[in-house]
Image (cartoon, rainbow, N blue to C red; front, side, top):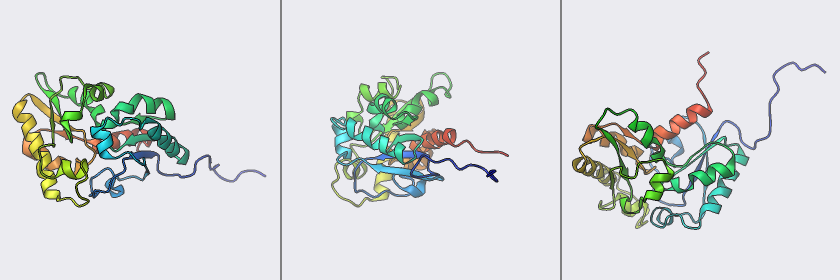
Length: 243
Protein backbone atom coordinates (compact mmCIF):
# COMPACT_ATOMS: atom_id res chain seq x y z
CA UNK A 1 0.00 0.00 0.00
CA UNK A 2 1.41 3.40 -0.95
CA UNK A 3 2.02 5.85 1.90
CA UNK A 4 -0.26 8.89 1.89
CA UNK A 5 1.66 11.05 4.36
CA UNK A 6 4.79 11.53 6.46
CA UNK A 7 6.23 8.68 8.51
CA UNK A 8 6.14 9.18 12.30
CA UNK A 9 9.36 8.02 13.92
CA UNK A 10 9.36 6.11 17.22
CA UNK A 11 11.95 5.00 19.74
CA UNK A 12 11.19 7.24 22.73
CA UNK A 13 8.78 7.09 25.66
CA UNK A 14 8.03 10.84 25.73
CA UNK A 15 8.01 13.37 22.87
CA UNK A 16 8.15 17.15 22.70
CA UNK A 17 10.45 17.69 25.70
CA UNK A 18 14.04 17.31 24.46
CA UNK A 19 15.71 18.80 27.54
CA UNK A 20 16.20 16.70 30.68
CA UNK A 21 16.97 18.27 34.07
CA UNK A 22 18.63 16.32 36.90
CA UNK A 23 17.20 17.57 40.20
CA UNK A 24 18.59 17.47 43.71
CA UNK A 25 16.25 16.11 46.39
CA UNK A 26 14.95 19.08 48.36
CA UNK A 27 11.74 20.53 49.81
CA UNK A 28 12.25 24.31 49.73
CA UNK A 29 9.84 26.31 47.54
CA UNK A 30 10.57 26.43 43.81
CA UNK A 31 9.27 29.90 42.98
CA UNK A 32 8.67 31.16 39.45
CA UNK A 33 12.11 31.62 37.88
CA UNK A 34 13.64 28.75 39.85
CA UNK A 35 15.00 25.98 37.63
CA UNK A 36 12.83 23.44 39.43
CA UNK A 37 9.60 25.30 38.62
CA UNK A 38 8.41 23.93 35.28
CA UNK A 39 6.52 27.17 34.58
CA UNK A 40 9.87 28.98 34.42
CA UNK A 41 10.60 27.50 31.01
CA UNK A 42 8.96 28.61 27.74
CA UNK A 43 9.37 25.02 26.49
CA UNK A 44 8.58 21.58 27.99
CA UNK A 45 11.25 19.88 30.08
CA UNK A 46 11.72 16.46 31.67
CA UNK A 47 12.68 16.21 35.34
CA UNK A 48 14.35 13.42 37.29
CA UNK A 49 15.01 13.72 41.05
CA UNK A 50 18.23 12.01 42.16
CA UNK A 51 17.24 10.43 45.47
CA UNK A 52 19.63 11.12 48.32
CA UNK A 53 21.37 13.97 46.49
CA UNK A 54 20.58 16.73 48.97
CA UNK A 55 21.84 20.28 48.47
CA UNK A 56 23.98 19.88 51.58
CA UNK A 57 25.65 16.72 50.23
CA UNK A 58 26.29 18.27 46.82
CA UNK A 59 27.25 21.82 47.81
CA UNK A 60 29.00 21.23 51.12
CA UNK A 61 30.04 17.60 50.65
CA UNK A 62 31.42 17.71 47.12
CA UNK A 63 28.75 15.27 45.85
CA UNK A 64 30.92 12.45 47.18
CA UNK A 65 29.71 9.01 46.09
CA UNK A 66 26.82 10.38 44.04
CA UNK A 67 28.23 10.09 40.51
CA UNK A 68 26.68 6.64 39.79
CA UNK A 69 23.26 7.94 40.85
CA UNK A 70 23.53 10.95 38.56
CA UNK A 71 24.70 8.81 35.66
CA UNK A 72 21.78 6.41 36.05
CA UNK A 73 19.30 9.28 36.37
CA UNK A 74 20.71 10.95 33.26
CA UNK A 75 20.48 7.71 31.32
CA UNK A 76 16.88 7.34 32.45
CA UNK A 77 16.08 10.81 31.10
CA UNK A 78 17.65 9.87 27.77
CA UNK A 79 15.59 6.68 27.69
CA UNK A 80 12.48 8.76 28.27
CA UNK A 81 13.30 11.03 25.36
CA UNK A 82 15.76 13.71 26.49
CA UNK A 83 18.17 14.80 23.77
CA UNK A 84 20.28 16.99 26.09
CA UNK A 85 20.90 16.97 29.84
CA UNK A 86 21.44 19.71 32.40
CA UNK A 87 21.34 19.85 36.20
CA UNK A 88 19.87 22.05 38.89
CA UNK A 89 23.08 22.68 40.81
CA UNK A 90 26.11 24.56 39.55
CA UNK A 91 28.34 22.50 41.85
CA UNK A 92 27.65 19.48 39.62
CA UNK A 93 30.24 20.88 37.21
CA UNK A 94 32.37 18.25 38.93
CA UNK A 95 30.48 15.60 36.92
CA UNK A 96 30.56 17.36 33.54
CA UNK A 97 33.06 15.06 31.84
CA UNK A 98 31.70 11.84 33.32
CA UNK A 99 28.07 12.58 32.51
CA UNK A 100 28.87 13.63 28.95
CA UNK A 101 30.81 10.41 28.44
CA UNK A 102 28.09 8.25 29.99
CA UNK A 103 24.92 9.42 28.27
CA UNK A 104 25.92 10.11 24.66
CA UNK A 105 23.97 13.37 24.35
CA UNK A 106 25.03 16.99 24.98
CA UNK A 107 25.42 17.81 28.69
CA UNK A 108 25.65 21.20 30.39
CA UNK A 109 25.97 20.64 34.12
CA UNK A 110 26.55 24.17 35.39
CA UNK A 111 25.79 27.80 34.68
CA UNK A 112 29.49 28.38 35.44
CA UNK A 113 30.22 27.12 31.93
CA UNK A 114 29.15 30.59 30.75
CA UNK A 115 32.07 32.35 32.42
CA UNK A 116 34.49 32.01 29.46
CA UNK A 117 31.74 33.02 27.02
CA UNK A 118 30.83 36.13 29.00
CA UNK A 119 34.49 37.04 29.45
CA UNK A 120 34.87 37.12 25.67
CA UNK A 121 32.23 39.87 25.49
CA UNK A 122 33.86 42.24 27.97
CA UNK A 123 36.20 45.13 27.14
CA UNK A 124 39.87 45.04 28.18
CA UNK A 125 40.39 45.43 31.90
CA UNK A 126 37.02 43.93 32.81
CA UNK A 127 36.42 40.42 34.07
CA UNK A 128 33.62 38.10 35.07
CA UNK A 129 32.71 37.55 38.71
CA UNK A 130 30.69 34.74 40.28
CA UNK A 131 27.96 34.86 42.89
CA UNK A 132 27.44 31.44 44.46
CA UNK A 133 25.39 29.97 47.25
CA UNK A 134 28.61 28.85 48.99
CA UNK A 135 31.92 30.52 48.21
CA UNK A 136 33.69 28.46 50.86
CA UNK A 137 33.06 25.17 49.04
CA UNK A 138 33.27 26.31 45.42
CA UNK A 139 36.70 24.81 44.87
CA UNK A 140 39.32 25.01 42.11
CA UNK A 141 38.10 21.57 41.01
CA UNK A 142 34.62 22.96 40.36
CA UNK A 143 36.02 25.92 38.46
CA UNK A 144 38.38 23.83 36.36
CA UNK A 145 35.61 21.39 35.43
CA UNK A 146 33.57 24.31 34.08
CA UNK A 147 36.49 25.97 32.28
CA UNK A 148 36.58 28.89 34.72
CA UNK A 149 39.90 30.66 35.48
CA UNK A 150 40.98 29.87 39.03
CA UNK A 151 41.53 33.53 39.90
CA UNK A 152 37.93 34.48 39.11
CA UNK A 153 36.44 36.76 41.81
CA UNK A 154 33.74 34.98 43.87
CA UNK A 155 31.20 36.00 46.49
CA UNK A 156 28.78 33.75 48.39
CA UNK A 157 25.54 33.98 50.33
CA UNK A 158 26.72 32.11 53.44
CA UNK A 159 26.61 35.27 55.52
CA UNK A 160 22.99 36.05 54.66
CA UNK A 161 19.96 35.47 56.83
CA UNK A 162 17.73 33.39 54.51
CA UNK A 163 18.97 32.04 51.17
CA UNK A 164 21.79 29.77 52.36
CA UNK A 165 20.09 28.40 55.46
CA UNK A 166 16.88 27.51 53.62
CA UNK A 167 18.43 26.04 50.47
CA UNK A 168 21.53 24.35 51.84
CA UNK A 169 21.02 23.84 55.57
CA UNK A 170 17.31 23.00 55.12
CA UNK A 171 16.42 24.74 58.38
CA UNK A 172 12.82 25.19 57.18
CA UNK A 173 10.62 24.44 54.17
CA UNK A 174 9.28 27.98 53.74
CA UNK A 175 11.33 30.89 52.41
CA UNK A 176 11.00 34.65 52.76
CA UNK A 177 11.50 35.65 49.12
CA UNK A 178 12.36 39.26 49.96
CA UNK A 179 15.08 38.20 52.38
CA UNK A 180 16.43 35.65 49.91
CA UNK A 181 16.66 38.35 47.24
CA UNK A 182 18.44 40.65 49.68
CA UNK A 183 21.04 37.95 50.37
CA UNK A 184 21.80 37.51 46.66
CA UNK A 185 21.96 41.26 46.04
CA UNK A 186 24.22 41.74 49.07
CA UNK A 187 26.61 39.08 47.77
CA UNK A 188 26.74 40.80 44.38
CA UNK A 189 27.39 44.19 45.93
CA UNK A 190 30.16 42.72 48.04
CA UNK A 191 31.69 41.17 44.92
CA UNK A 192 31.88 44.42 42.95
CA UNK A 193 32.98 46.41 46.01
CA UNK A 194 35.97 44.09 46.47
CA UNK A 195 36.58 43.73 42.74
CA UNK A 196 35.50 46.88 40.89
CA UNK A 197 36.99 45.43 37.70
CA UNK A 198 34.08 42.96 37.53
CA UNK A 199 32.14 43.83 34.39
CA UNK A 200 29.56 41.03 34.46
CA UNK A 201 28.31 38.44 36.93
CA UNK A 202 27.47 34.78 36.48
CA UNK A 203 25.17 33.24 39.09
CA UNK A 204 26.24 29.71 40.02
CA UNK A 205 23.09 28.73 41.88
CA UNK A 206 20.09 27.58 39.85
CA UNK A 207 17.74 29.02 42.47
CA UNK A 208 19.03 32.56 41.85
CA UNK A 209 17.39 33.53 38.51
CA UNK A 210 14.36 35.07 40.28
CA UNK A 211 16.75 37.65 41.73
CA UNK A 212 18.96 38.28 38.69
CA UNK A 213 17.09 41.42 37.58
CA UNK A 214 17.30 42.98 41.05
CA UNK A 215 21.02 42.21 41.20
CA UNK A 216 21.69 43.67 37.75
CA UNK A 217 19.88 46.84 38.76
CA UNK A 218 21.75 47.06 42.06
CA UNK A 219 25.27 46.66 40.65
CA UNK A 220 24.83 48.07 37.15
CA UNK A 221 26.34 45.03 35.43
CA UNK A 222 24.95 42.29 33.17
CA UNK A 223 23.94 39.14 35.07
CA UNK A 224 23.87 35.65 33.59
CA UNK A 225 22.40 32.56 35.21
CA UNK A 226 21.11 29.07 34.53
CA UNK A 227 18.12 30.54 32.69
CA UNK A 228 20.41 32.13 30.11
CA UNK A 229 22.45 28.91 29.89
CA UNK A 230 19.47 26.60 29.39
CA UNK A 231 17.75 28.95 26.95
CA UNK A 232 20.91 28.89 24.82
CA UNK A 233 21.27 25.13 25.25
CA UNK A 234 17.69 24.44 24.20
CA UNK A 235 17.98 26.79 21.22
CA UNK A 236 20.59 24.49 19.73
CA UNK A 237 18.56 21.35 20.35
CA UNK A 238 15.41 22.92 18.87
CA UNK A 239 16.47 25.78 16.55
CA UNK A 240 13.68 28.22 15.77
CA UNK A 241 12.11 27.77 12.36
CA UNK A 242 11.81 31.03 10.44
CA UNK A 243 9.85 29.67 7.52
